[in-house]
Image 1 (cartoon, rainbow, N blue to C red):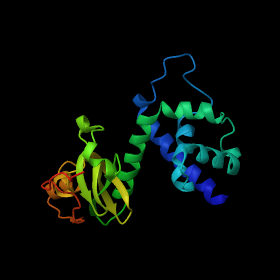
Image 2 (spheres, helix red, strand yellow):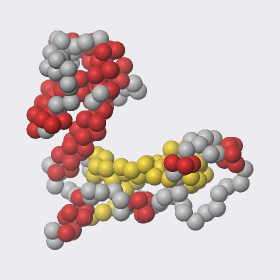
Image 3 (cartoon, helix red, strand yellow):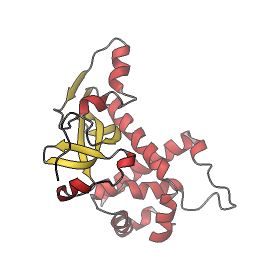
Length: 217
């Protein structure tokens, strides 16, 4: 699978370059085994291939990489050890995703951005009258294209035409895109406007509501 080999090399080089450019993020080990044969860059590379394979779980991703490119990671540990290593690198995964998003946006000359959202319901509509789960953390009633729900909404700033998510926020269900867009920062639109250039921003119609009452049970 030449395409897979190319993608693995491309992903590994990006991850390894990022870790070398940020040595403070890799100095978290305090034991004598602070220089393992199977590096953090290799651990992260396998995990980031989930998008390539379009798998539902990291275990499926690990198995597909092991079956189709066993020579790429000769020091590869078993799945359980690999997933334990990955769980300790969750902060790095978020940083790498953001770095990749900003790199993709910077290399594309067209600067068009979309603010979009989707609901995360915490219960079925039949339980709306008794819904209390995570209400102290901000869960609330909102309305999407599919109707009322109780929970949160993910609001994201998306670069077009790459489709890369630049930044995202988890907010109460009754926040609409217009209200949330001001908090999606650092926002490339603000940086470009402050330098005297004008970019085009596109915003999808809001599906949230802040004025409707709670639905009855």
